[in-house]
Amino acid sequence: MKNFIEKVNGKMQALYARTQKAVNNEDGVSTIEWVGLAAVIVALMFAVATAMDGQGGNLASAIVGKISNMISSIGQ
Image (tube, rainbow, N blue to C red; front, side):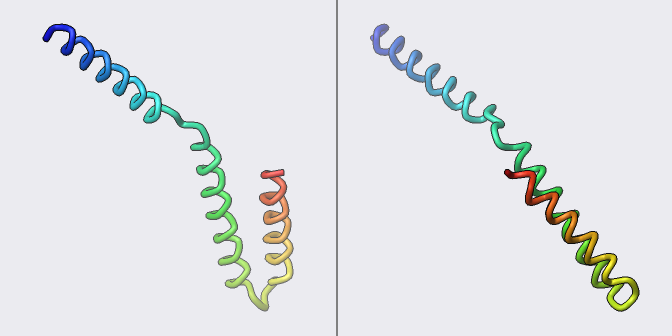
């Protein structure tokens, strides 16, 4: 019986260690944050371009285009 309890304890500790490793793995999290930030910036720029339509819309479109190019070059 003692051997069985030790086996179960060992298995539970291994399971706990694997679970902790998976939970603490933050690889890729910062990429998602940057993509989210870029999406917010692009949305704001499109809102500005729409609001300025007819009143310097070309300037807003140029700004949106440049930012879009910079964002697309980040992943390369």
